[in-house]
Length: 124
Image (cartoon, rainbow, N blue to C red; front, side):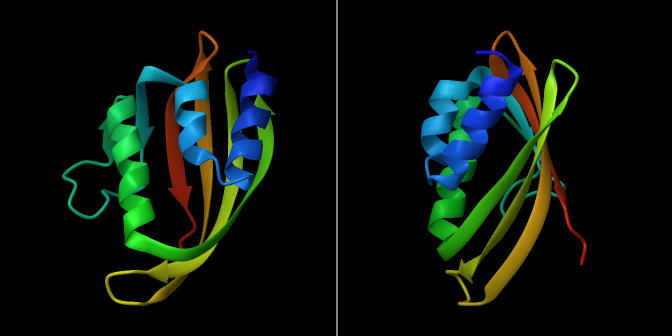
């Protein structure tokens, strides 16, 4: 797959609720995921490896409920990067609080796979 195919597949998969399926199809085994801040229970903003990234998705699925989300894009940059804007709202299971968020993700592609993702959160 080339950059455009990977980018479109990621956005389509996210909008279809198939984010976990995207991991096996689109990501390198040694991919790195970088959050804007450390996630709860984590010492680092960075997660290395596909199994770790799967764990992040599992945490999100167990920590949130009633999530409605949309991926906007992709926005291509050169021949090795693209960005996606994510919009989500839902409820945190732990305290029943609601959230609404928007973030930008930048994906780096090499060898026909996503090798790095970086998330930038809206501070509003």
